[in-house]
Image (cartoon, rainbow, N blue to C red; front, side, top):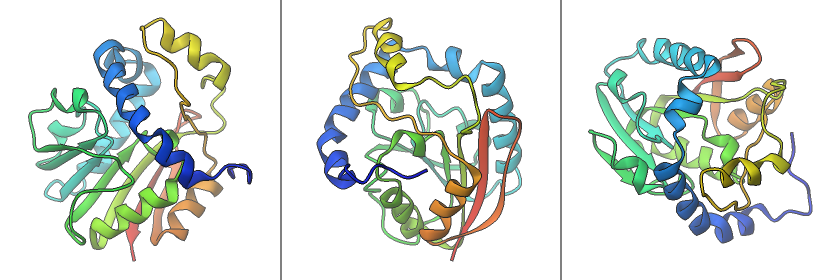
Length: 214
């Protein structure tokens, strides 16, 4: 998957970042994501698979990137959450910070693991986010990624976004919800300094990848 050449990704990201913060704060207040997403069949399968991956390294200092309300926090002993919406962070009983994933406010070589579940599809400049992930990871640090599978026939298409969010009283903004092939996800991770240790799927809902910083 490639973005259209006519789009200036960096400019678009800068112009929409403040809007994204407002949007996700509204969403956190009004949209029952735990019921709509995490309690769905695909959401339960995704969570089970990610928990299994997290349990393989229980002591790793972990940054939960785009952490939402921290559904994986109970399974991580040394946890730091990061999200663009403060309304999500208010629900987490663990260290957490409000900031965009494009500018992670930590020094380099801090974390042993990053969890980025259902994050990259909502961001235009995915290269910048992955460069930041590599920067704050220690050498041989791990990144666990989950993204929507491009073959999932049930994903919303752009015309549906406005109607969907309107029912929760949330104004539509240029919402991003990308779809990924295995080839595209591999390319993204490898070009930004990660060696792929595992990449696969469990059905057509999500793709998963485990990368190691070089």
